[in-house]
Figure 1 (tube, one colour):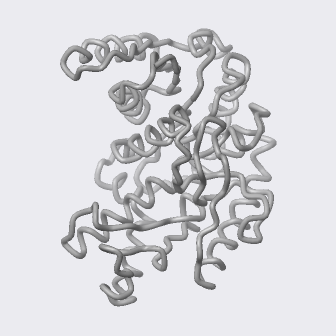
Figure 2 (cartoon, one colour):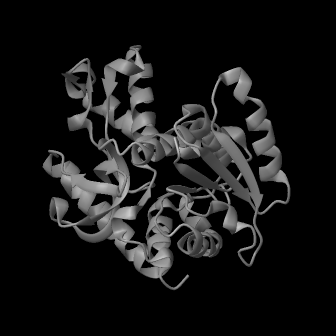
Figure 3 (cartoon, rainbow, N blue to C red):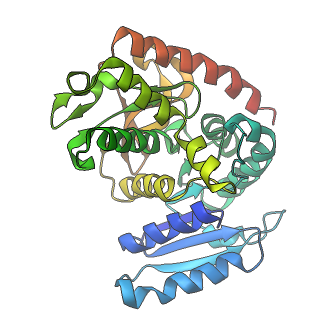
Length: 316
């Protein structure tokens, strides 16, 4: 105990992330912040009252923040900060449609993190994910290894669930991987995907694998279309919380995340979805995976698509 983690944004995503982090019972404090007055304090009170039932001691603290950084002193000394702040998608919206409005929010949050939690590892989940991760690094001026984004964990979980449902097998028997961007240039990696150790290609015809890949790529939009208001939060919060846990425990767990890539796969100078070892300093190292020529080409294409947009965020 003794570690402190902050979740910025107390919407469904943020509050569920805070709940998961508190229930791990590995942090002394979970701070939940929001711009809606009283909301984070109310949620914190509710979560604290669940402690005797669920049997965890982590204290949850709520803090309302203002437009000029008021309230951010509550995050002081945080070891990890998860940024969920920003608007979610509505049906028919792409993640990129959120770029302008969420950039302002994420920049302001990042500047306050730099001020009050200068040694934190920052995990970004606001959309559009790859661009917001780049912006958070620019705004905090933190070393690039200490700013990473949550995407590949979620996309891989969606791919795994899709495969398990298609084959009617337990999710625990399925291993999948997705790289690239969190969006149209996502690169699911069938060559690294298996069921009980058997390659996916041996169990499903190529057109069926392609169908599952497409469903994975559109996984977020599928949820948004069904919900009508808001977007996914149970699976995304599970992914972000696991990343924060790996940082807090300095576990060195290998996870697909949005990380700064500088030379790996022959790609340089861009935030991109890759596998990485996660520990107390954030990304300890990017782990290169064997890819087919087509998968590698897809990853390079994703890198260029993201690079073009990341260059624009510096001015937002």
